[in-house]
Length: 231
Image 1 (cartoon, rainbow, N blue to C red):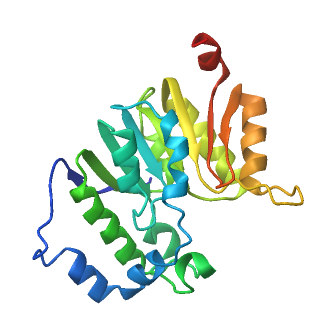
Image 2: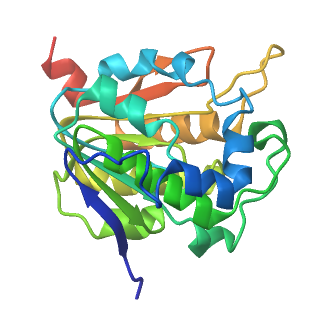
């Protein structure tokens, strides 16, 4: 049986710059976090446009958090009533994430440092934010139907894992809910990645439709019945 670990629950809580558990200590202890976040490959502002499709004031989740760098943008743009930040951190990767090349500035980020950065960002948000250390499928299976109104998915990029995540999200997504995510690419010569193939396979078999796909790898899908009912 999986053990779900809630790291922190926060509402309108802010850290003092003098807080010894805040940013200064984190960057001194885990220098790799700062190095990885400064890579310039996270495309934070370019990932905003898809968020216009998210209903405001609802309950959402980011699955695949890393250091939580994108989470404040989700909170700012989507203005959620409740936001979950879900990542397995050391449960999957052990003490360090892999070296993801230019994305992490060629360093291996300690999972403890990434988790701590996400927790600090959760405290700084102006919404109710809960950080959960768990595998995506295990966490999703623990939820009740209609638990989430939207999900931003940026976890495993393998075809089978993406399809599994999408199927589990579908079981707990509210009516008129939406699923969004990152890293769906089509190359200049027309080659597509595993996320693209997973999205189309899922949409074909589960009666979803692609609403958004842009040059920055952002995508969004929604149930066909919900799209038709809003016309």
